[in-house]
Structure formats: C-alpha cells, structure tokens
Image 1 (cartoon, rainbow, N blue to C red):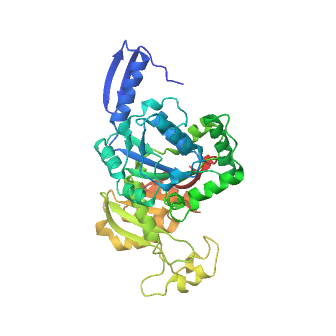
Image 2: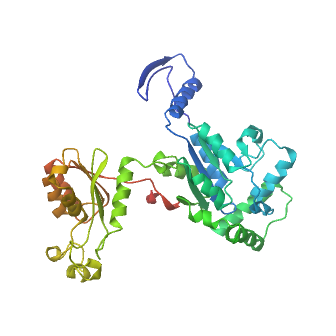
Length: 406
C-alpha cells in the first residue's frame, strides 16, 4: 500500500528541510525516491546462482521491484545453456528467436520484455563490469553466473556479492512443471526422473556444474516459499541490500579482527578474541590461553579447563588468561586513553569487566552473550562504560522460513 501524503508536507530528508505544497502524491513519492537513490555512496551488483527453478529470477524480480535494481544479462557461451528441458532456458531460447534486442523479464513471462534494452545485454564479463563501474550510484543484479572464471572476475570488484538460491528437489520439480505449462499449456509434463537427471547435470557436472559457485556464495538462501508476498516480506527482513555486506562498518571490521584473533586461542573451554581500538586504530589484540612460557591449555597446560568443569566453576584455579586481559596487558595503561573501545566476540566476564573499567575503556562492543552478562552490565553501568551488542547482517545458509535466524 502506498503511503498517504498530505497536500502540504514538511519533509526532512538527508539533512535538507523544506516545505512542499500543491503537489500530487506521485510527484512527492518520486521526489522521496530520488532522495533515497541519491544518498547511495556506491554501486551494488548482486549475482544470483542456484539450481533449476530454485527461485533466482523471483529474487531478482524482488530486488528490481522493491530496491530499484536493474537486471543485467551475460550471454557468454556456456554449456549450461544446453539444458533444453529447463523452462528458464527453454523460454529464453524461444523468445530469442523472435527478437535479438530484448530478453524476458525476470518473472519468466513475456510481459514487459520489451523494456529490457540491448544495452543491458553483455557478451563478456569485462563489458558488464565496465558498464556497472561507470554507473557507480546504481544497483544491478544478474542471474548469469555460469562458471568459476566469471565469478572470479566479478569477485575482484568491491561492489559485488554472490547470493545462491536453492530449494528441495521436490519443490523445484513442482515449480518446473508450473513454469512449463505457463510457457506451453499443451507441453508434456517433465517426469521427476528427467528433472533429476537435468538437475544433477546442472549442479554436479565435473566441468560445468554450478555447485562450486553455490558453496562460494556469501549468502545461501533456502527458498521453500510457495507464496510470493510472503517471500518478498521475508527477503525484506533479511536486508540483502545492506551495504555493510560489501564494505564492513567499523563495528563489523573490528569484530571480524576479534574473531580472527580468536583463531589463535589455545584454551580448551572456549575460543575468544579481542581487539582494543582508539580513534579507529588498533592498539592491541588478544586471545585466551595460558601465559607465556607455560604449556598451552590444549596440550594440558591448564588442569581446570582440561577437567571439563562447567562454565563458571573452578575459575580460581584456571591458568588461562582471558582475551580481554591479554589485550589490556599488551596495550598498557599509557596507550589506553579516553575514547578507547574494546571489541570482543564474547561478552566479558565479571573479572574482566572490573579490569576494563579500571584502565579507562569508554565502550565495550561484543557479539555473543555469556553467562555473566547481567553482572557485567551492572559493573559497566556503575563505571560509566557503554556496553552494546553488535549483530552483523546474516550470512551463510539462511532458511527463509525461519525468520528467527535473522
């Protein structure tokens, strides 16, 4: 439903305050859309890959209708186009015979196909990237990623992200049947066996299969939805167009460094990493484990951790330094001044929280909760230390029917 706008509307948008009178709703909405587009700092190119009838074109359609993405087509010669039985390819080939300058819309029907101009069809990946680079404030989507060579070229650019779309084979077969009958109501049904053979060839062929691309996707959508409106609403909550997915925010950047530091942990109980930052510069890093000169915890250096005691028990006998302690010791009091921020992938424990307060840390940002979050929050509140949780945009495998995941 479109928002209602009064005949006299006072608008505050992106730092500009002005009054609009005697304009139609369409003009006002167009102006607001213009401001929304103008605020973008960089382009975004989303590549979609996945199995036959998994929903790639539907996701592309959503991006176009709700976020202003334009569909780009790559017409390099690939053996995947030999899947004549797949309706996505069959319909495309049929329509190519009638015109050389248009391609079908992403919804898989003839409606509106003439609106896709020849300038949006490319015969090399280089040409597509050059086109997008020159239009750096616009948004683009493509479903034509057929090889790892194409993907490697696209991934070199900072504005590209790969999203895979998949669905159970039974659902994809059902969608395939529907699509075939939309193209030709008199067409014979495609048997499940034939569909499985083509699907396996499409995904698992050792030379042309798309499974390696799917595994390299930053976001992997599992699309079991049978309702278009529900799918669109779910995709809206997922926030695919969040630009932090392309270039991480400072919070995400430093939290990723903390997670990287955690990979060096040698503690048997929990892997934790920490980064101490001032003025967006890293002062020190730390991870949990036994002190210098002692045997690593993972090699039996800490009896408490290796005894398998429950979390919070036997801490007085634990020989492992916490990630926060290591970072604070490494930085030293002289380098920790006002405005210093501590990033830790796990909320600090009570013992670490009092040390953090003592050295003058201004803010603590964490990713995962811990058993002492309430006590830690009380200490920080009394000490005037800001505590907040950072939740990055959801990546990896995302079941679109489980909104709790994001």
